[in-house]
Amino acid sequence: MCSAIARTFDRLKQRNGKAFIPFLTAGDPDLETTIRLVSELERSGANIVELGIPFSDPVADGPTIQISSERALRHGYRMADYLRAIESIRRRTAIPLVLFSYFNPILQYGVENLARDARAAGADAVLVTDLTPEEGSEYCACLEHHGLDAIFLVAPTTTSERVRRIAECCRGFIYVVSRTGVTGAQDALSDTVLPTVRRVRECTQIPIAVGFGISRPEQVRAVWEIADGAVVGSALVAHIEEHGGAPDLVSRAGEFCRWLLQA
Image 1 (cartoon, rainbow, N blue to C red):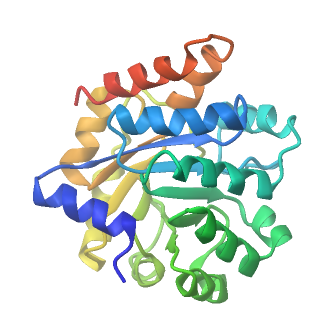
Image 2 (cartoon, one colour):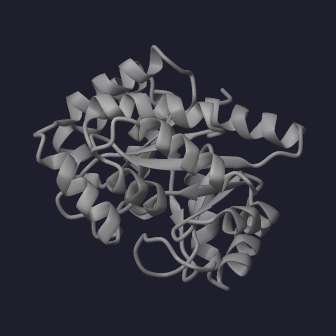
Image 3 (cartoon, helix red, strand yellow):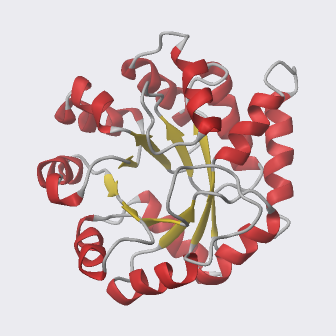
């Protein structure tokens, strides 16, 4: 069955378009605002939205997303609260949603429980930053059984053999990390992006989205020239932090995304 994410990339390809995929830390500054932000991001040009599940030890994330996770965790939200937020989002929009998480919160909730409940709530995919394909066969099978795409990361240091293994496990799209290290806005794209995307494309026709460090319109444009989608995380999360107390936070986030989409 063709997933909502796959259909989104197909539609974009038919009109020579590329995907814009913003990342939000769920619950920052609070879940009600997160729900409103998703709708605003769609109105502002987003094609897919990643919802980061806050975790106490986000080792793949830089300071901006780490701090946003700390802010969200102070609310005491649990996985069930995030799933209820997805249900609320689904009443407003059909935009594809990717749960972006570390494995520990999923393990604590139960992989089967998470797959079942996330799909019932309206999620379309799950990306676990610290789970490898070598250890994820049962996890992938569970997600597939419940109609969720499993998305994995490919880094510049990933060997071609591992790229092929990752491609066999991935559904929806493959997330190419633009550089080694953690998330965080950068002034320029790493020179490792193009060769990494080329190596992935040699192994699969699954759409490729590039993230980590994308923070300006010219970087979005550069990614679109070589890949199928651009993911913007830390830059948007930092913008939300900057305007967190403003009554027009949601509209400001939309303006920021429209600025990025000048590409």
